[in-house]
Length: 361
Image 1 (cartoon, rainbow, N blue to C red):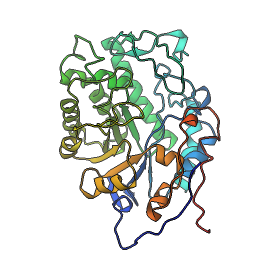
Image 2 (cartoon, helix red, strand yellow):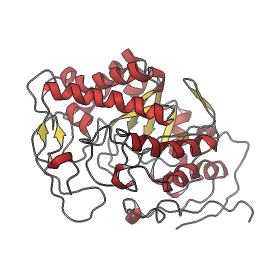
Image 3 (cartoon, rainbow, N blue to C red):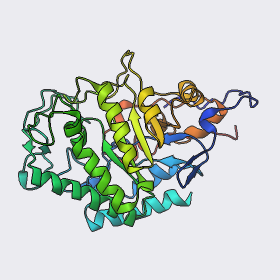
């Protein structure tokens, strides 16, 4: 799966990614964050026992892991084998996974359509975990009353997460999911208080932030945003303004962190050349600022050193290298990730079988 070679490293040079950081009440020993990644290994929407090994492999003392997105209700599922947090059995299933970390087709109920801010069909033919063309059913446009119920679903799910033992929650407002759909004018075609202006389009995510922060405390709340991304027709005509507005508005709720995907990651896996920057959002947001999107050791160190971010989230590199902080410290070679196994349902292959460095050789 790649190299395990250890190269000589000049220990006199500081490594910004390995410097400590205080994020609210959380004292982090380094700034390398496990990014949330859909893995499709949770059967019947319940986290499985093999996730204990997956997450504990990537655990370091004083490290920060963000788990894969977990559905807040039975209407929150877009594809199979993703975990949830709305049922008691789901809460119980997460507990041993969290304890381990601390110690070291159509997926809607009753055949209903997926919910959205719109009833427009997606024109894209790409879907996660499949190589053939995708078919998307027409979504149901949420009513104002239904929006209130979804906001409460997020609140209850956050309560469940704390009950399960999580240290906090990250609200998924990125990558073309429901919250992102409301914010983006390419999707949101509403004519009520949740559509039109930036203020209206951001009303739904901010209502969720408020509800979740009031339920579990703002010091336990983060949010992930991707104002520049265009996943599944979910783009915006003015991402600079959208990102800046959200960064400013979030300060009202004093949440712990804002986690933003770099403008270069316009699509899911491929980088693009752009002059856009997250610097304006970084300057405005008053909490911890996390960046993600195609980072490696060198540019991760650079963005920390120049003050462009407080923490850097790594996805594919952390997936393929469960000991990524150690490899960065030693400047060692990295395992190569296998994209063909990202979304398979195998509980071992491409999940927990990536090798660690052999430090004794």
